[in-house]
Image (cartoon, rainbow, N blue to C red; front, side, top):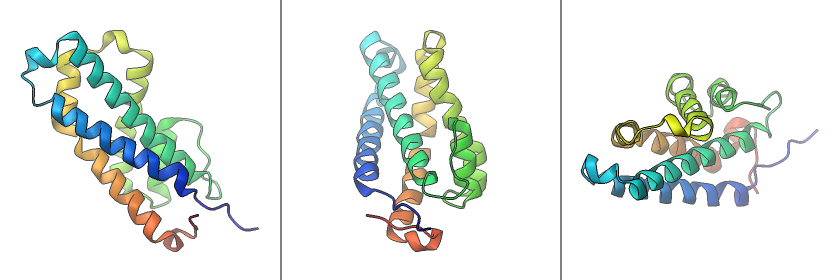
Length: 152
């Protein structure tokens, strides 16, 4: 039975969206922490970060749904399976991507506990994780046969 192809129209707009959100986060983090912590900036940072994380796990879920045994029901499971299937470096998946999944859940369910200082630190230090993820996805889109996949 042939595998369903990866749909580029599901992946490319999300890649673009993640890149836009990361760019906006990089602009916000240039602000001094006090200015960053002002309500409007803090809310924007949370929004862009959550949306970028949603994009990561939507892409990951889409890719895994095309692989036998790849279906995952939780974000951390998506992270780990991307590593198991070699889509993402296994160590990166188990550490960074799994932590990103946990933080997405924190942003969604425990948003009242998040402080400007916490978001500022993440945006200042961890944005490169998005680039690592996107490079791996773009590599898959260029050479899907390496993963026994096709792209349409």
